[in-house]
Length: 313
Image (cartoon, rainbow, N blue to C red; front, side, top):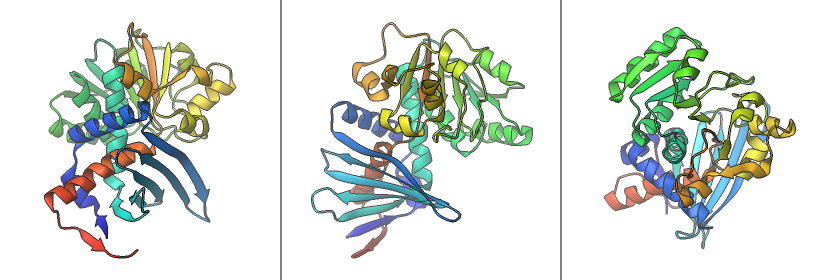
């Protein structure tokens, strides 16, 4: 029997604090060889594009299929032995939650010694999860926000100020946010680089999560050239999806063999000595979907939550 779990139910059953724990755990599983994944694949139709990716976790023998096209966004969990569908979850909330959690985990392991100021470029829907995750993972005192639309930026600051016990402040320029930030997050849908990193601090973590297609770009090759260390969530995914890293490698600014998978850092602990300038490129990968989806499924079963059940799909 398959469970159908709505977005409303997912919001009740998992929050950012729990998502951070299960996403960090899945990276430990990756490091231990307990996870296999199929990177994202895309298929275009007349108007929309279907995106699919999948993961398998050995301990639970569970397969996860993440699929989204337009407004449709689902996580399907299968029994790895029988192939039976265990659950279909609405992933509208979960997909954003796990993307934020991945950045929070990266910040925990890769952030500089001082993380007083978090800078955010792109105050949109995904940015709310990025800020929440990093504030929970690091001792951030102030969040600086820069956006092209002042009205939208002020509304973002107003809303997040209600939810987080840190100072929220609008930044008047990209140069200002670069000069002040200890952690700099780019959460945009840009097709051209936003920054070359010329004004960044000596000790810094840059997190980019919007350039998850070859045609998307958030940072220039010059910023990547300034980095001492480049990390990504999944190297095979980055090689086909990460617009910024692909461009840097094509330009001989970076070599793929020098890009470090995040699970290697998490398994070993924070790098010592810590490289001063670090970039983490997040693609959004299916084992993160598996981590949050499985937690929700377990909560539904443990708490005997009333959800729709179907005998056949």
